[in-house]
Length: 221
Ligand code: AMP
Image (cartoon, rainbow, N blue to C red; front, side, top):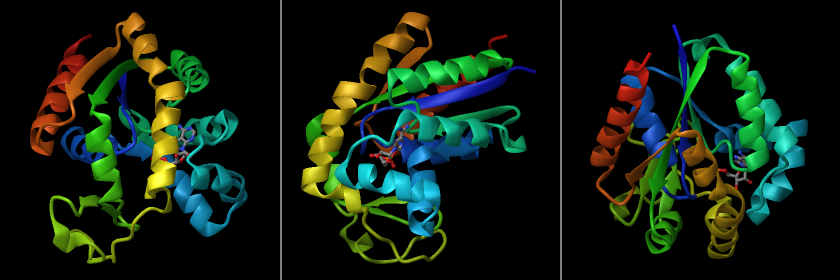
């Protein structure tokens, strides 16, 4: 059977993490977030974390070699055998080429889903974002002011706000997205892998749209 690589492509605050979660529940592929893996490494004070920290705090991208290594290792795990969802990777053309080379050695189809959200909505979402440090669920205080500083409704852990969700760092991250990551839209469009959803609809509708795209890609032989 062919393996499926789902790449969620979109700006910071675009809803990749939330949608990766939904999709992982419906299609049973693991959701792999390089941002989450890096934050854990920073929190644990590992060698990788120490190397990545200063980039993450300033809103810059961590060097390709570090994230490529993380993804290469993670994809070897058994749970990725029939498919996986990448949230936040690739983020540069070099990463996309690395991934392509990696997957070309295996029997894998690639589906890229772009989540389109305007800058105004992104800034609004990022400045009101709260996350569960345990299960990684994302909450939004603009939609539900009661979440700020309260507990995760799934695992009861106290929610935190991300250090890089400050106004200055958000600005930088949005610029980095435009400069380094947005060119991937063209790259994947030219290969015929790219589909897009309107990321400003209600989350359930976005999840349905993504589910349809991934479902029909998986049905192709
Ligand atoms: P995220 O949680 O996806 O917003 O990622 C948080 C931060 O981790 C980013 O601002 C980058 O510093 C770093 N990061 C995550 N994924 C990547 C990647 N694929 N390439 C480079 N840096 C990354």
